[in-house]
Image (cartoon, rainbow, N blue to C red; front, side, top):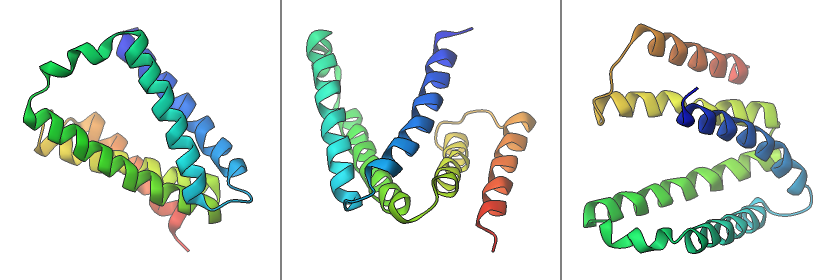
Length: 140
């Protein structure tokens, strides 16, 4: 199995655990505070990894466009997490997480258009099933 597949599977597992932990953690606090605690934790862990692994020395390799795109990604991540935590506070984890994960459909469309990644029947079928699953969950 390729390394990136292992990383993707680990990401999936930890993302699933994250949602349940967040729901429990938000019981008595505003979702913005919960998100702040989560984000601060992430900041300290990633900063430590960059210092210990000396990854910060690669910062000179970034050009203006890459820096802008990474900052834009940080902004969209922030907005995603802000709305995710607000939804998680009041909604059912199973519904909120499923709707959130339907973002894969947006990712796929953008990867086809902007990154020129190949559109295959297998990818289209998977995306269609994800989208249909999300519709089934939100249908009243």
